[in-house]
Amino acid sequence: MNHSDLANAIVHWLEYERLCGRSNLLSEAALKAPVGEFLLSTQGHSLEVEVPYPKEMQPAKGRPRSVDFCLRRAGGGRVWTSIVESKWANGKRDLSQEVFDDLLRLEHVRRSSQVEPFERVFLLAGQSKAIVQDIFEREANGADGRVRLFEGVLPQTGSAGVPVANAPAGIVKYWHEAAINIGLKGLPLTMKTKLVAMASAGTFDCWVWRISSARNRKIWEFGEQK
Image (cartoon, rainbow, N blue to C red; front, side):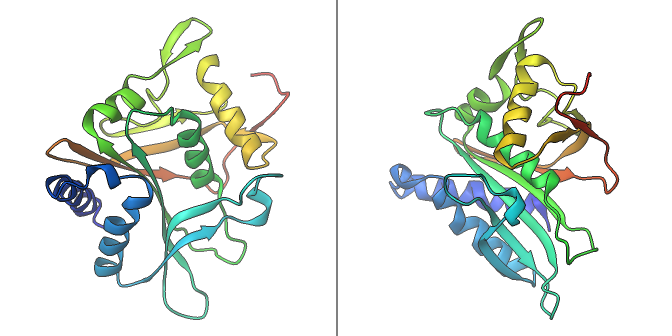
């Protein structure tokens, strides 16, 4: 997947919609149009939307959780090649827990029928000011005062080894809640996030990160001493 082309396609589509006077229609649901069209026209694989996560990752109550976009290779195995979770930032609501939930789902999800690894992508788009407000400047109460909530989680350059289980108190509570939301009894000690693309057009930004998941990752179970 060409992440730079994906990010550019999204921001220019968003700016086109704004210039056509349709800014009030932009939302996370609206992102399905540019993301879906790009993946369908460039990847050579079948595309499915809202593919349910495995049963064991579903919440005990509430609506079932699904991955936003899933690319599958044609053939009997229907092998996953890439999955994408997307978020829309508009500065009007707190996305914090939803972002942590998506990141942990992307890191944790496995297919029992598939040995071949697949790409895990987290995509964030929206008004540039809203992304700064919702992600890069959002703070949490940590044990040693206030800490930047997504610092070291969604890097603005390069890659980061995310300290999941041993994060500052103001951050680990989000990871803990994310684990509960998908039925986990523990957290990976670390996972890796890498910024693979960022694009701007008009008043919009799109950021794309790849989430890595080690096969033999170590788990910190709830109740253990850090």
